[in-house]
Length: 192
Image 1 (cartoon, rainbow, N blue to C red):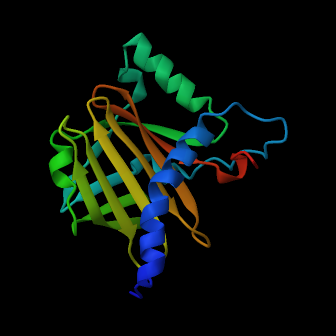
Image 2 (cartoon, helix red, strand yellow):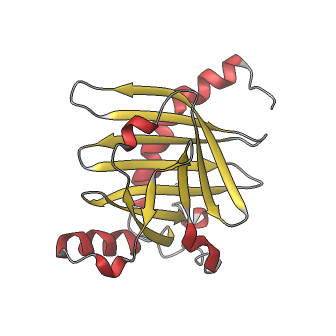
């Protein structure tokens, strides 16, 4: 795999947190009147999205009908109603997920039966309060990145693959170990 020049790699590392924050803010904005139409429905095989680290699942998809807590259902509904949410799946985070994320360790995201995105950890940090951050670079000759923050509330993550294979996914906490995995319609991001 070709390596990025050092200057470009350093610039990407400096920009990653800013891009992730801007992405999360953009996804939470109100819909605009000129928003483009949503993506066509995802293929049925995307219901099997998985993430594994060294063969260990990072999360397991669940039937959202199992969510009985009204606050959790309201958070899920709010995520589904965001203008950029093309598809939303519900997953339960595996216990000890923070121990699976390490520098140099690959995380494989099977986003459907025909597409595997492999990110290798490039940076990991932990605060005194126990929050863990992890960054990974996309492998396989394509440019992309993933930024993950594990906090007491759960995982917040943004995963981006640049064109021509462009795709954006986010992972957001719902309640406890329950998380929303969102396939983002980039065409509906605000133009500003």
